[in-house]
Length: 227
Image 1 (cartoon, one colour):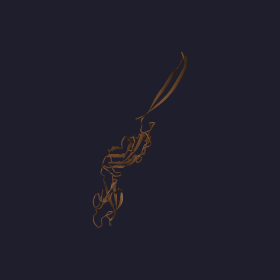
Image 2: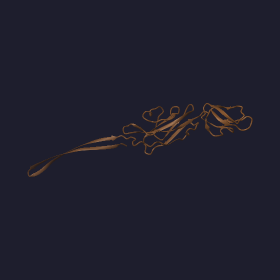
Image 3: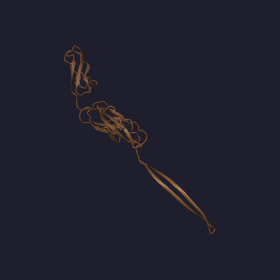
Image 4: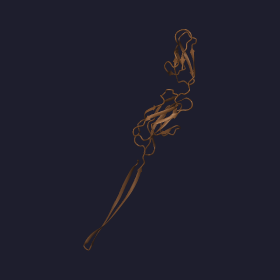
């Protein structure tokens, strides 16, 4: 609610006239009181110093830098105590932005959302994509200009709904040694498992096109799993 100011100004005018009539003294007093009232209403706005940086920015649907088949990205963050402004958010394709700062020049970019609470959601469609999420608190100052708090970010958020395909070549082949080189190709993989035992066994590692590998000992045909 706005604040009301009331200003008073006044002028007292006193005019006394003394006369004598039939041994009576009397005074004629005229008083003039004028006043003016000026009312000013100051509009309400989200005011105060810059709000705290956004805290506890998390995704309730995804883990940073871990591929997921979940196509709905859900983000949450803590709203600073007493903060009455709003937020600008952006789900950005990683091919466009990996860093972003909200300001007067960027707040009108395509895809920027205006939200009032500490949550936002994005539904992915189309091909596999990686995203970054950006959010900043925004409020209006007494001049009705937007001011911006620090921009927080989360990502990459990797949406991977299409299983990758690939192939592997052993070099040299045939070989007289258990130590070989695996030449790997894929159309979409970012992580992989390689094992002599079973698919999915062994540590997860970043995909590489060529890795040294040790086959099982002994003569004969050997197998390993690449996925």
